[in-house]
Image (cartoon, helix red, strand yellow):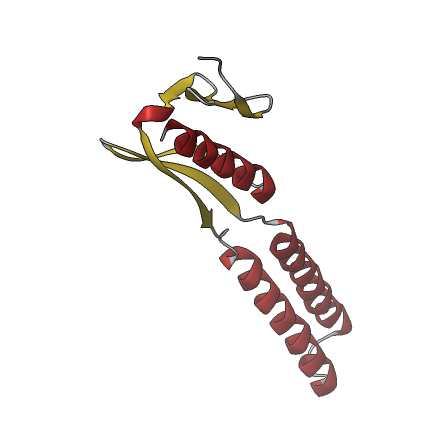
Length: 136
């Protein structure tokens, strides 16, 4: 029986006989299911920096309106708040979700690949599904 290649890239190969993820190899016959799982990224630090930064800007403006502190302190608070808000926004926009290829085996589930590329993970899962269905 010839092996049909369903998917192949630099580190993953799925054929009608086996699925290879780097050095890890799994016989298609031993795989009962393959699913894509989304693991959302943690955006807490970015959101926290953004909120604290905006609060700093607001505090600086309130202090400036009150004129109780010197001009350099007000500028420092507003500048610091602005920088913190920009950093928080950058963190929020740069963080990406992770997608996992999870295989169902007789011994349980195993995560074989984690990637930020959702399309790649979906292609791999579909390839494994096609290989499983070919097995009968």
